[in-house]
Length: 476
Image (cartoon, rainbow, N blue to C red; front, side, top):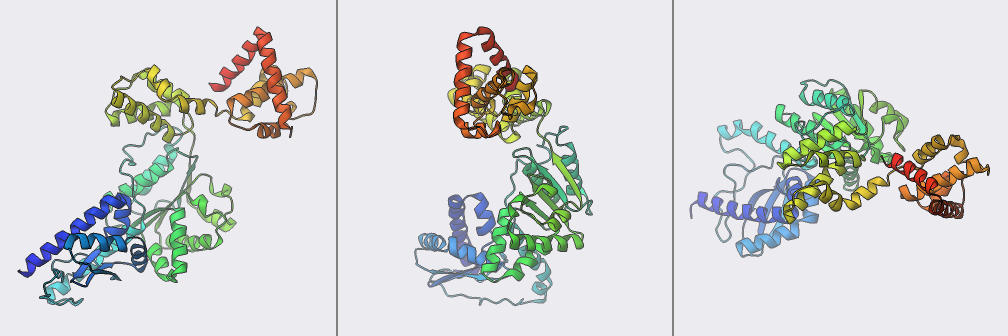
């Protein structure tokens, strides 16, 4: 068999093994750990492959080596040992020294160029593994999270404008860009959009995007394998470093120390750093003051809770992406009822569209209420005890402090009991938790208040209507 046919045959076998691995482990794990594998050689006794870093070798060997060996045996029909080596310049080359099982190699494996032309091509060969290396470190990006799919409104317009500027600027505009806001408001979407845009506009730039937890894991792994120098080189040689949910490094002194030095090294080199968290830098718990100060150096942009108008826009955009027709009254109902975060809002729309598709029923207000009954009930109960106390105090013209006081005058005690009753029915708080919010009272006091209000409701129509009015005001 000609050498070219040998190479082609074994490469096809290896491609089939990779295809099976990809189906088994999923796209994200495949791209991170298995796609960078390069097949070097194969014979009856051993199949050799290379990865660009020691960290990748340890991970692949510990998690996938046995499965690779089993799949390779299935493919070629011979049991071969699997050897994974570190080759920093590892990448598929035009003429690898692949040896078909049972056939002797015609060309010896050599790392040296065999001609001046091959030597001239070395810089291009050296650049490819750098890309693979950074892709293996970086977390996977969601293709849906782009700037085009981000709906802009007043609560997020500053964060959006800043993210867009960072993604499209040739030079660093402000460092770091710090995005913060509550769960499901769009921080991760903007982070992914920045990474997508930079890779599209400046493909030569090396970008790492990962969660703070993964950064911490990589660092701990480097400590255990005594390979911290490699870790430092990888993270301090990027053009853009993006860390999501940085609040999770709180209380981790060693990780904070390494992140602090990585951050300073990149900023000193005028490399872009983008950070996200659930709180502003000054409010991060368990984070050293010097770190808080550094994180607030650049532009701090917060993402506020959504407005009704923004939720309407998000739902209309999502319906357009799904290519489905949703009645306007359904969109308005969802925008009105699901106010917690964007993620839950989009999830609700996905559920009603899936239901309509699967059961063959048109989307209507009635089916929406039926399909989302659990979600709607949970959102209805997301009133806080503080909001209840404030609304009841305003309604009965008493002071907020009376909700926590020990005064027993009926003019104060009755509104307090009503507030306890509403807290029981409109929040998911336990009776002891409710009692603590009312001046440290015992749970039996809350039980008595609930029972008393229920008795008054059953015997006094006007009182019952008053309670229902308060409930509607709080729910809406």
